[in-house]
Length: 318
Image (cartoon, rainbow, N blue to C red; front, side, top):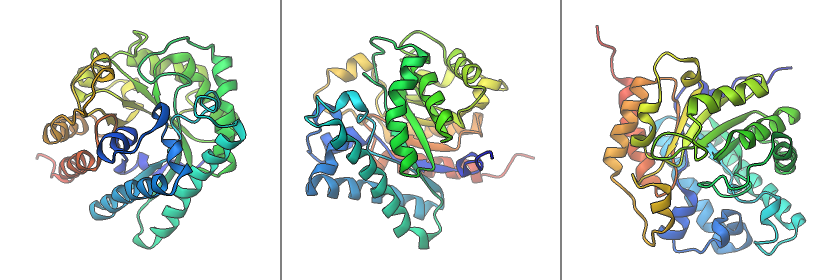
């Protein structure tokens, strides 16, 4: 039986911001290897993560939107166990714990009637900026099935694969989700030219994954770039652009290479970022999932929400 359509396809949903940069720079908590999963190992880390999520839950409540709660599991697939000083079993347990935390938060907010989707976040096997060694589709599916199975066991509503840098890995994730009958969104990292780090266009990436998976992903997203980098890459009235339903943009207009060497956080201009999102959703009203990526925090997503809600509520021209 086909899964029910995800509610974020029919109305505005927010999601969170740049979790790792917020925790590191704004809250002063170290994240070994940029892995937010380590927050679940200490009371201090768990408190910070709980506080972080509650900010977005309260925002969604005030704004009357839905919310996609993404788990703190972006860098917690099998290869990261050894660098993080864990056994694979210990890392697996933290993956399950990360989902359990979101389920508990959703239960707490049931009385507010906020539509909440619990999503298991899957990051790339390697770096989110650099594709490095590109796996085959089969290798990627085998690798990511391990974490996807943990999310299936935890009864997530969906998975979101964030910062996908190349087509074969994105395809492998989508096929892993398909085999497990778990809904999935694929979010591509793009460079300042609006292309994937491999040089592929977004149009080609979306079409290639859809062709290889019989259109299995529920939708696609763009992340880890400023709207100024990709807005002109999106084309009106095309089938591939219609598949782009979410944006998690960077705060900064800097390139990935520039961001990699920064020692201070570049929060950009939240008001301008919000204005650019407003223009995006006016051009492409199918974009209904809005959050942030590197350098963004609650203030950025709040500004984006206000601008885009006003846009969607604005009366149509006669």
